Image (cartoon, rainbow, N blue to C red; front, side, top):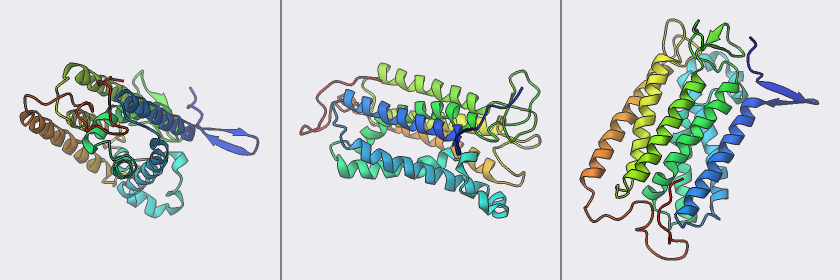
Length: 285
């Protein structure tokens, strides 16, 4: 069985399927976030300009974090630092730079949307987009598989010898399950405190990242997604995942305990009135 093609030609132009997958994923995230904002009564004319900068910041942050986590490899191969079409984008790096960029710009261009409300609205969008991105990104890139395996579910990936654990598919399933849990929380906990969905997403996603990194992304003798057995990247990702899991649980408990009995619905119905302020009840999706 041959690996999934990672590129094709249109005349002299080389098209990388990895890049096409990421473009589709960003488009999906933009459209879905726009829909959720509109469903809650917010204006969205400001979103396009902000989203362009979020895309740029996410890619830069994701690549920078990946390079730092595998510094020994890229120190010996500096010419590959910018080769993003071969894969190598860190989830944590994308979040660390992309999310703050989006929040700062959104506050400047549309201050009616409060910080924690925006994060609650965007959390399911990020998780769903991450699931789609796993299928349309790493699944279609060079060396996109995990540890070598002889199991029936193993797949062949370009740039890797033998069958590999299909980690992108596993990660996509994890994300879609988390996405379903978040929507369930939005439906069932109508009087949840603002920020609860955000921290639930962070906690569940962090736990999933830890298990994915620990069990599925390793080489034959080592766990973790790495290009060299001396890399500390796997341990950093696992530690970050556990930190997100624990921190998310703490914040969920803290928000729930301090929630006043009379607190209104969290999805923007309690926002201040004015131009562009929400006028409709919360609608999930």
